[in-house]
Amino acid sequence: MRFEGKVAVITGGARGLGSAFADAIVAEGAKVALLDVDEAEVGQTAGALEKQGFEALGLRCDVRDEHEVEAVVARVAERFGRIDFLINSAALHRRKYNQPFKFLPRDEVRALFDVNVMGILNCCLAVRPVMATNGGGSIVNLTSTAGHTSVTPYGVSKLAARGLTLALAGEFAEDEIRVNAVSPGFVGSAGSLAEYPKENLMSLLASQGVRLPESILARCSNRDLVDVFMSLQLTRREGRMDDIVKALLYLCSDDSGFVTGETLKVGGGSAAGF
Ligand SMILES: NC(=O)c1ccc[n+]([C@@H]2O[C@H](COP(=O)([O-])OP(=O)(O)OC[C@H]3O[C@@H](n4cnc5c(N)ncnc54)[C@H](O)[C@@H]3O)[C@@H](O)[C@H]2O)c1
Image (cartoon, rainbow, N blue to C red; front, side, top):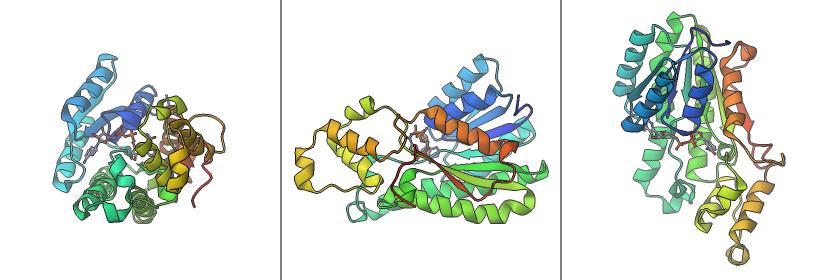
């Protein structure tokens, strides 16, 4: 039990990668606080863990609101007595955020950066004093392979989150808090991708820095576009949730005690980007 007695706060914990990480870390002894703007679903996700005998708290929290974040973090500290890990998984990543900036109204850009960048900052600043009192901790921010190409608003928000990771690693080091990021590639099957509307596939390709000319796009089937997307990966298999979860567990564990300020790409070696 690597994480016995430890406490993890997970934003965006209602579903997806946040919830998959919660399943994995409670199985290794940790208690979890799941924070999400979706109050009903976060309650259900935490409730399901409690039914299995794990200690889990599901709390409504909008990461954009620094005061709400501070109040929720105080509740977690009061209930569990400490915070060792923060996983910042909450994000906006809908299709519209992968179109060029000129098509995205300015208030949508602001909303995107408010969650994907300011949300991370709010949560990191709120947990820092609690982590400091128990001698340190580990923070992991979910970025994206799209943040290594950064040709879309979503990619730029993830690139900014990588920059924030580096800056906060420097600032938090005096409190023995490590700050790293994991950039997942696409997690899901090629089969499920082929069901996506063509527009979504084009947007996914754009997030990886690939913009095909209209003349070629018109001749491509959905399956062709999925093949192009998959060919950007060097590893010849589909990405799975547990590929990402294992990287998050590593960055929380003492095995990564000498690692801070880093971004680990977990995208099957997606070739594009920096
Ligand atoms: N799944 C992938 O293939 C993939 C690929 C690359 C990067 N990522 C990144 O990994 C992270 C998790 O992705 P996912 O697929 O699990 O996403 P998801 O959409 O399944 O879950 C994100 C959660 O964040 C919550 N959320 C959104 N705005 C919020 C706010 N203001 N305050 C609090 N919670 C809020 C949502 O309610 C949702 O439960 C994200 O940062 C995403 O950008 C995912």
